[in-house]
Figure 1: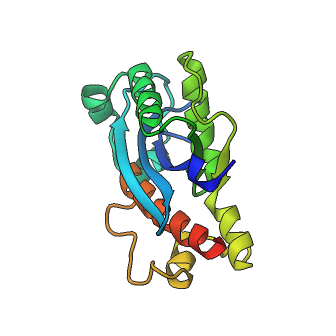
Figure 2: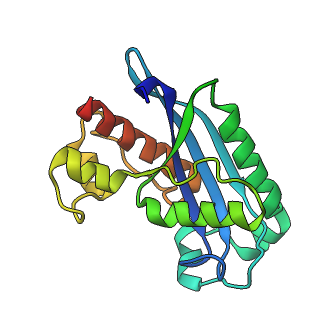
Figure 3: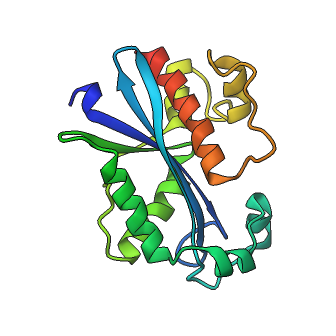
Length: 192
């Protein structure tokens, strides 16, 4: 598969706890990343907050993102509809012959929630089992340890990220997806 037929999707999720189905997917942020003749670039974005469907709300997890259960119950999108929107949005970013690849910065957490929710609602996971963990990618591209492949370290070491800070809204799924997209682009450019 040629690089230009691959479309990367930087995805970040916030959740009410460490694992589905005991806890809820709170929000999804996603950013399209694609190759061009000049390099890699970001494109369309998606952000959605979901109504809770499971009883679990871990106080420490909710403190990370600061979105309250009450806010989600009142303003969140019905979870099945949110997943249908995500699948449709992803498919809508693809031209004929292009394939989506899920990218997370610790992908195992984010992909597990996305995969579970797709299957829970009987929706095909548009990414299948294709996922890139940008922490692992950074280990290989930069020759660093897992522990050094954190966002703070990468901010200092990757060209194009100097001066960029996570900011005060870190742990907003869309903000984090944007930030992770910049990390992905810097890593892909280094490998290219």
